[in-house]
Amino acid sequence: MPTCVKCHTPSEALTSGHCPACVPLLDFPDDNLVGQTLGEYRLTRIVGQGGMGVVYAGEHLQLGRKVAIKLLRSERAAEQNAARRFINEAKAIGALGHPNIVEIINLVEDWQTSPPLIYMVMELLEGIDLAQRVATVGQLAAEEVAWLGVQIADALETVHQANILHRDLKPENIFLVPQKNGDTRVKLLDFGVAKLLDQPQLDSLTGPGMAVGTPQYMAPEHVLGETLDQRADIYGLGLVLYEMLTATVAFDATQEGEVMVRQVHEPVIPIADLRDPGKPLAPALEAVIMCCLAKSRHDRYPSAAALKDALIEASAAADDPLVPLDAGDEDDFDAPKTLHFIRPSPIAPRTTPGDVGVGPAPRVHLVVALGRRRVGEFTLDSTLVRIGREADQDVLIENSSVSRFHCVIRHKRGQCFVVDLDTSNGTTLNGKSIKVERLSPGDQIGVGKYIVFFQPNHRQLEKLESATIAAVAGAAAVPETTYLRRDELDALRLGQTKALSAQLVRIAGRPEAVTIAPGGAILGNAPDATVKLEGWLIRGHHAVISKSNFAYTIRKLGRWRSVFVNGESVSAQVLNNKDQIRIGNNRFEFLDAVSES
Image 1: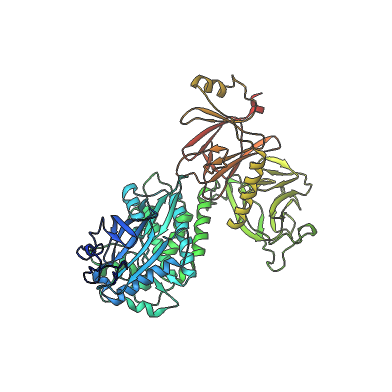
Image 2: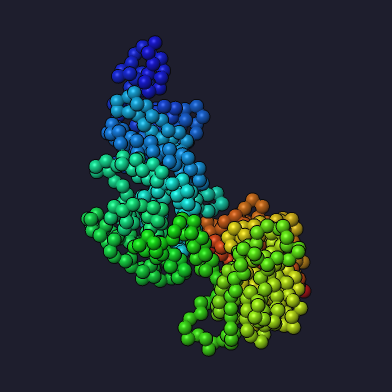
């Protein structure tokens, strides 16, 4: 018995090789198949369409799984080059397997039909694309832009490692999927004009009239027809980041040719000139984007990985409580006579017997400041970093308040410690005198009149934060939460009711007092967080409150997180009684039982 060329079902009644169930598909245009069956899927609605294809939401007939189905238009399927490019897109994406790239589940090619039936089955995404987000909200917050940019750059890093160029980065091809924890996950879409660098013959599949990108997001070398590399995608991402911050397309005109001319010859308007008043913009973030938008590819970041790291650093700078040292400010403080940064040899870093065999040393980032004035900063690769005013110190600060051999930062068994070298002036950590203390990201080390801010690189940062979370989680019981009447809340805050231990009193939303266990508390929306926070700005383990030397310290976990104490953005801060804490839309007052008694 003959079988249907589409579903392969045996049937005596075939029409153009199709069984009765598949015949209706022949009579409908590509954009009107809602309610029809395509292979193993029923098409339920249209979610998008373009010149190459139509995207439907579908449901597996047996499993009920929700999917998206991208169907190549009939007229395109009849063009061999267009069909090959469509198949190339599916294979390019399907091999990547990255959380920020749309997942391809299956590719179906039926060349026995006329025209051929070709479609790909993808994960169904719920959310909006970036163009819709900007059109609805306008200029996005700088923190959100940096966070989305890191995700896109991370996806591009994987794409480029697979020798693929996207070549059509634009807001419409970047999808935003809300997560249950309030975060937003980026999904990179539409590799229809992607270029496989190790298969240049496939690039010739672009036929007359087929777009090879969008002029508003093309790199100058793309416009000029030069050979492209991954820096063309970096330029495209720079334009997307620019649009997120300004709600303005950097280069636009009524004629595509004019847009292309502007891409090659005109600089963009500075972001700060277009940014709305009241919407802060860190100069470091603007500098990163302007580097992406350099007309010469040689002046851009060399890779997506480098761009990702730069965005992380820019976000850290945005949260840095230090004020940059401006010209003419030197008289405002007692600057050191000399401040030298000496980088030890990365080939033979200093070690001590106790450090042998504990793994590679971290790249430690240190910022030296006096008051709120940044004096200098540097990065060291060493197991031992020495700070003092003796000539051979790694961080040399010639000032009478600093001892000759003041303190050292040691890396041992995956953790970093600060050790005071029995100095007359002493060494402090977050305002408390110490001898030896484990360091956490954002800690403030007091060296004479100076503060050294400790910040490892982002990979070491993840390890240290994991250790911090584990230590607090191991010592902290689930805190007791007591919901209060307004009069009870006022009595507690005024000290009329004594707290038996430190508490966080929520002062926004429903009044409640959260008792902090002796081991501390983890704040965030992760399942094991002991103090639950709400809002899209909250991500996983957001901050910790830990106790040492009879003092509580709050630390943010990660450069993306923001914590404010008494209106000041902090990385780590010793908490005093009645301090006001804001994390996203969550507001607390810290009450220290020791201070109350």
